[in-house]
Image 1 (cartoon, rainbow, N blue to C red):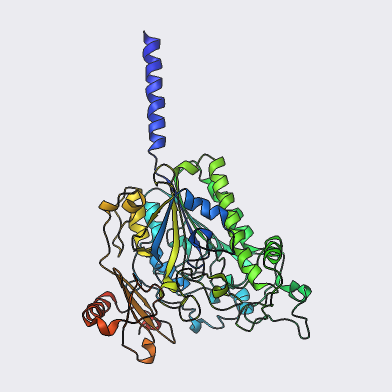
Image 2: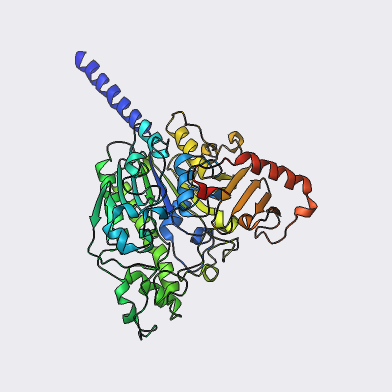
Length: 504
């Protein structure tokens, strides 16, 4: 009888352990691409670039069709994501290289003086998404591009809730995929690459732009994305017995155009020969610009597949939430060609409509969320949400109180409980570009934009997104009441930033 009771007790303990494992909090992986447009994935309509592994995430999860970044450029978009505060409230509202430090645009100088690299920093003690996840008992890691504080500042990853970091501290350093160094936490890791300024390195005088040999100097020994991926996989290995929060902030496919040779050859064979890019629109020259841009995305897609394979091998996949998105719309320089790829998808993406602007092509981004057993496979939602919503969503997932944010959890949408989903009254953006300056409001089907603010413009354009996704027909004159309401909200939504460069 005693042995039977003992056996029963062991069974209960086993069942309890199994139950606890099933109910354990999920690992969370947030994948952020850089300058990838709404239409750059096959599952969002892309016809030329192959993305089978990202498409698999979509097939196994939910596709969000009205998800927005926090800003149309890197640093402020990341700041909104990290703090849950929209761009009228957050600390960093534009890219600021802090030129008062010295030669911040010189890659040679940055190589010698680490204090010259990096951007305007987050303040000490900022409640970030990383710090929130640490407080929830998660080990946190960030692998890729940072851009929220120069080395030695309070804005570095280790002081903003990130336990392990590997990658680029400075987004300008990320303009080449063969950098002379990367950062591992607070240590510079020097690579077997020479310093090549991506904005000054041009073809040799007399070089034939159609000869592949003319571009050999742009390919060096250590491709940063390979190194970043390896470090990230080590992080997964080291933390597979405990819940982890992983930010994978790849610089891909941001220019300069540089990709592994086998992927470039694949797309050269697919697209055929093309006009070379010789560097006339900034960044490094490239023999096959279309093929290389496609190669950068497919290379990363391959890495996404390898990460999923790793999670499955370690028995982690079923308990891992994966969010995949981009930091803003497609760029217009460096040899990129968003119209040729239809990178904007449903939206215009050429200069004035994509990156750096608050039209849909600049701020509406692809977003895919996968969570086996929780999110119904192959679903889709048009719920309107943005970067500031990620923090409250994760807080709800891990059952902790969310710090104050401008966001609303979209967990009900992910779980197919749309009737319980709260909605934003409106979304607000401001981008104090040093030359232009833009503000925008999204209210239901309505989109209001004021551009050229730094040039004295105060007139709002109004677009009906239900009937005019490309924002071609300004209907402000027909709806003065809506314009008036949006102008009131714009005034209410903005606070005066401490950094004068962000004021306008």
